[in-house]
Length: 133
Image (tube, rainbow, N blue to C red; front, top):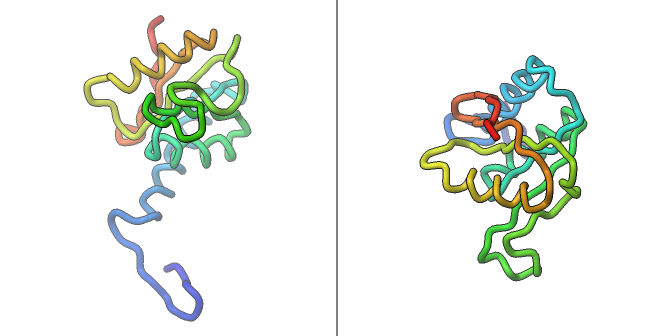
């Protein structure tokens, strides 16, 4: 039950509470992994950011967001915004992986910044897996 002013609202499937559940599952998965806080969570798009930022706040680690190539309104199209990745161990965070094009784009950008993509977290499968380099 969530309160909006004087009104009570029930939240069901497809609401913010579902995202909260995803974040909690992700936190538990990262805690069990033993990766620690010396990582940078890398994401792109709203789906990645909506998971990466609350996860980073809970775990005490940093976030870098890869801007899409056509997002030129702020001058950072195709580049990471956030902490520098040079020498850092990175985890790609996204809601799901289909064909792998987004992950390939993120991996290229991490390498260009001289970081290392070591892990990938996929929310729908609640899977944190090592990435072969």
